Length: 292
Image 1 (tube, rainbow, N blue to C red):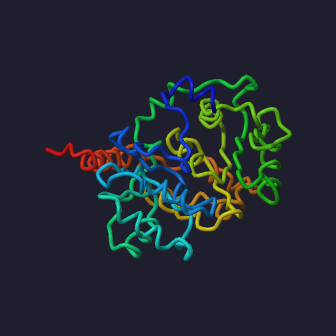
Image 2: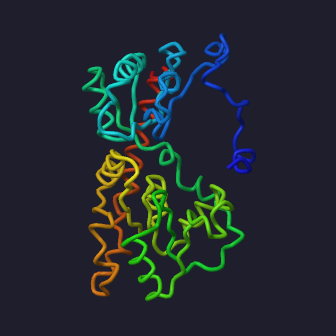
Image 3: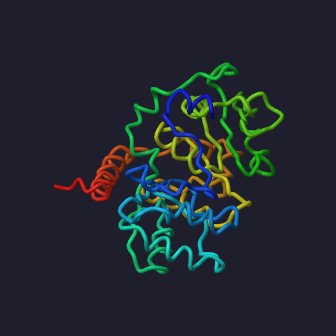
């Protein structure tokens, strides 16, 4: 991650939210909260939550880049903090429909549901970043990226399918594999782009499968509740059929149904991307007061 960041990003030194400089808000024009689950409250720390709600900055400085809560209900302990923090934004955006509903219920404010920022730039920009992994041998593989762990029925059926089709299984989250700590973000994209099938419980692996027109199957996460809303919104926006393992698992074992795994209807993707990118551009023009 550090290698990739040093090559492609220009950053300041790290900031400690517990010890912000007094003049911190004066050093920058804007502060952007986004994306992913920054509003989840992972550390059960009110000060951290206030930081990610940008409560140290003026309302005119606070931007949202499709952040996500990663839960279906506000925790009662921090309900007041969420309310005060969200009310401090002039314009709000989120990544999933449930997030917009939560904000409306708590504050009465409307939030615009936008695509994840990884989908807002042209796919050709991502393709420029692809880096062939050192361990890459050929393109006959199923790519597995499972944060919750590649196990149980999913693991068994995927391995059986790979054996029948003569494919490797590349699982970069397996701590015993050579891929585990040696996969950079640009190599991660390469693995997805060249995969015959992607099996994942990750929102972003699903996103890049769509951008790269790769067939994919989504498995359920058991470690966090409320994760499904992001995937639901993604499927809905792109008019994709349910790509969940529970819906497609019979196709893993049935030759007659197997094509369902590899046939993903991506005809709507270009037009949806164009529409959603225009929607996001209009939202950010409003945030930056660029409207004519």
